[in-house]
Length: 196
Image (cartoon, rainbow, N blue to C red; front, side, top):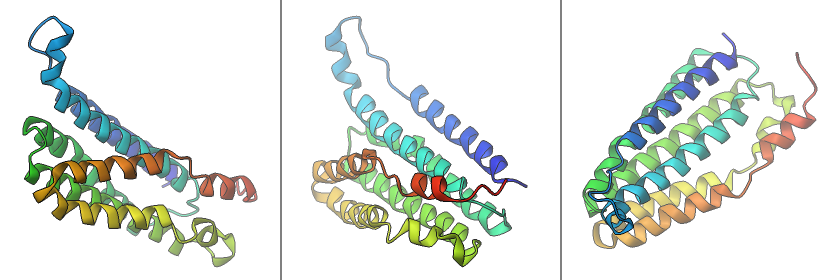
């Protein structure tokens, strides 16, 4: 099996995740722009989750381009990542329908932590299956963004229970951090000799 097959399957799952999220958006109960106010929680939750799915899709794409050999552990770790990402529509809908109540916001944070840990797992499996001289481990470095994200999500979970807006602000700030392009894998792939 090639990494392209894993990537295609993952792309399909993420496309379905986005589709489910957009279908969960609440339509305004009226014909004027003022009717959009009632849909604001739904739109905000959708926008945040869409950005997170886009970030995972982009980074996952670059990460899979580094794969030389597909193993069972890679397939299972990738499925673990997709499982957590597939919960985004559920937690997004719960947050928006509850108008960002504390428990749904905390649950959203739990899913974010688990997805981030699952991504680390995929990354670790890929690095472990590479020859040490490929330089992938060095290219990834300490992955400070990934570590900051996990710490931020972990702080945001209990924070949501007594200051949900602080928790949501933290989720948004971490998403913005990831919107700043991370070129580590692009540089690595550009410098890697063609193995095809």
